[in-house]
Amino acid sequence: MVILCKYVDIDIGEQKKVVSVRMLPRVLIVSRRSIRKNKFINFVGEYHLDLIANNGAVPVIVPRISPIQQMLDGFEPFHGVLLCEGEDVDPSLYQNENCLSHDELDEIRKLHSSDTAIDRAKDSIELQLVQRCLERNIPYLGICRGSQLLNVACGGTLYQDIEKEVSEKSGFDIKHINYDNYDGYRHPIKVVEDTPLHFWFQDSLQGANMEIMVNSYHHQGIKRLAERFRPMAYAPDGLIEAFYDPNAYNPEEGKFIMGLQFHPERMRHDGEYCTENVFDYPGCPRIYEEFVKAVIAYQGKRIVKSYSLSKLI
Image (cartoon, rainbow, N blue to C red; front, side, top):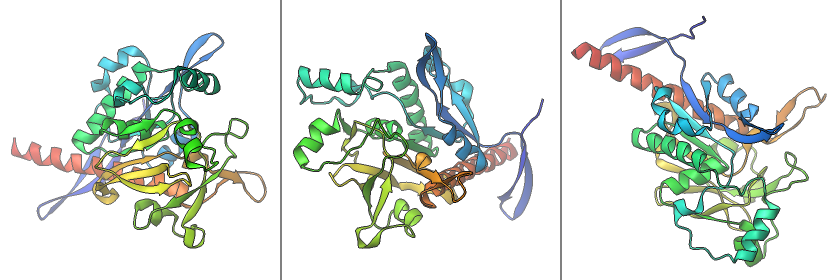
């Protein structure tokens, strides 16, 4: 059996100790359930796993199966949570004031059949993990559904369907989902100054418009942003595309609470010789670098706390 180890320096007063840690920092990622050959399977996009592992943390997949709802303590300790794709968040969780007719809801279910089936077991598992992150200041990165769930967990609400509730009323013909061009589709977002997203993408922003082109795949979105969060980017139709908690953001100190509606992991194109995928912007992998930096720092703080307590016993 191979045990993954690392060594860290910790400062206790005027002393510096080298401590052996029998565990690399662990990031929990909940799988999504699908059907293959008439059987349920669980999966996580490999891009996420690579980006976590390549930056020095171990991605740990939490299976979306009902018993796990009572078994999350078995995944302790963990040092970060990344939640990404999945079905629509159950509207009852954010007490949605339903402004859509039954006919409109039926039309939405037919158009987005792969996403509109509610998965209450996944909701339950992921909400428990979000709550643990919020209560213990564990680094959290939510992408797409993961950003929506973070907002709901903190008291925000969602649009049940962007096209019906936003696009048709705003007059902006912005697609947030393109079934015919899943990975290649892009739409613009405007980045808010003096935010982490601005810092990560500042060398790529297009002129005074502060815009980048992003990949997205969602028919729901942020309606009312929870009070603790600050927007980092908007789509042309006014939809919030990214947000963070300014009071829980300092990667060097292990603080990171953030939601991105777009998919930085899929924003890639063929390189010059078509031998590898190249990120559209350097800021795309930077998001994961900073997240894992916070994960590693959070683990280091736990080590210092545990070591200090052991010296008192």
